Image (cartoon, rainbow, N blue to C red; front, top):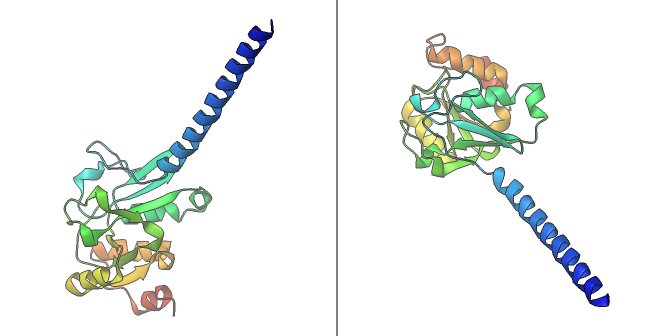
Length: 190
């Protein structure tokens, strides 16, 4: 009987050890699931429902434990993120580094943390759904694009709904490609 007890206790111990190790694997999986993922030809924008790959320019994504929300442009993602209910989510935001991508087909291997990116607003470059906010990991790359295609460089925390609306109207010819002086002061953090 003592032998049966030891075998049973050993089996229970092995089972508990296996479950404990399996739990460690789940924690690793959750951490990995918060990393950026590739865009696919059939992906639809979370906001507008359009096919993401049909448009040039940088894209965005919000990755949370519950899944990934993909956006056809950085402006769409930022507009979504600025909604109060979305700010409460524990999501990581990613955008394409256009310093390492071509405008027509951004490289998913170069998705960067959106909160640390540099954004160029007011360029002549076309993207999805109005405003194009070109995203960059390096400030000098952002400055180079602004010099070449117009616009100015902003940080993540300088972008708000008013700026996104002005940028969208610029794409539609409403402001002739330039932010007003009031917008410059309001968004430059001065």
